[in-house]
Image 1 (tube, rainbow, N blue to C red):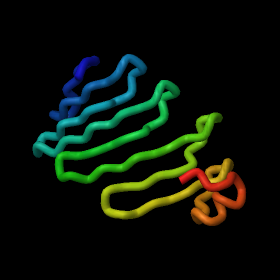
Image 2 (image 1 turned 90 degrees about the horizontal axis):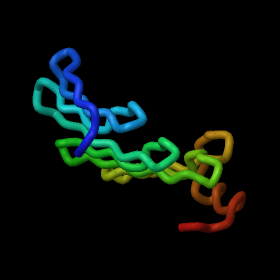
Image 3 (image 1 turned 45 degrees about the horizontal axis):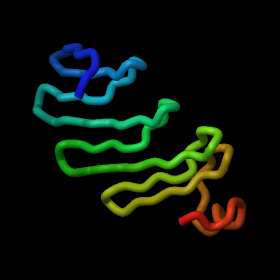
Length: 96
């Protein structure tokens, strides 16, 4: 992993070229990794305890879908309001 490394309040933080923190190691050993798309949208995050989450975005950069390793899943309309999968399919057509 490359980027700018900063130690802040005893935590190690690595920033990408855009200045976004992509890795944090806290003093207690807990770690967080984050991945972003070319537009700066968070697409994947995971931590050292095994939790992960993923996000999908539409062509305008609006989050449309989020799900995680504990089974939760959310859909969003173009205004960022949470909606059901069925509502999403009625608006946009089934994609998944």
